[in-house]
Length: 242
Image (cartoon, rainbow, N blue to C red):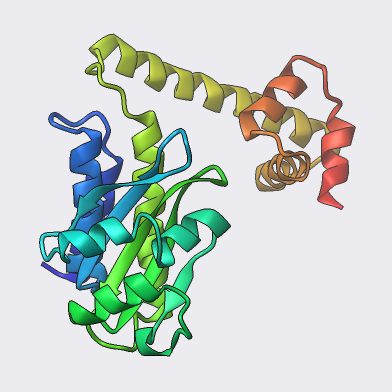
């Protein structure tokens, strides 16, 4: 299987919250496994925040570090700092940290690791945990691999907050499908209104809808509904095209 095929399967597996057997534990185990098997980390741990703001280890890849190191990461290290700052943390040379994480660094080096990264586990700009990636080589991962790991973490986090312990009923799925169909119809009606009002091509009308929605922090469907209901004037939306 090529890496592209692995990635396709990984993203589908992380996002399919309606699949049989899908649950949060399986989801985070998959995330850790993909960060090892596809991204190239040697050991990965996924931590999530409790209501008190403490970090709890939710998953550790099969090539696990010592239990002591796993526990230390919830209190000290790149994963903890990543969660606190909401920003990625890179420690590509653990032997050159000037005492930043003394306990974590000593335990990681003793276990044979030379570099570490941490990425935020986030949903809609809210950080709910972090993903720690440990590597034996003291050089760390390439920027492209880190972006890939962040994308996998983002998909997993979104799937996590949309997971429900109750299996989806066929009627629930049908309701969501019909809502999407109705939303598309509303957008097309709004697009037609802009085409007529501004003497535009359909693609130009869609650009105006997207520009206005993005500038005002609205969903595309919300803008379309406002146009269709006549609570928003086409001229106001067209002005967003600049």
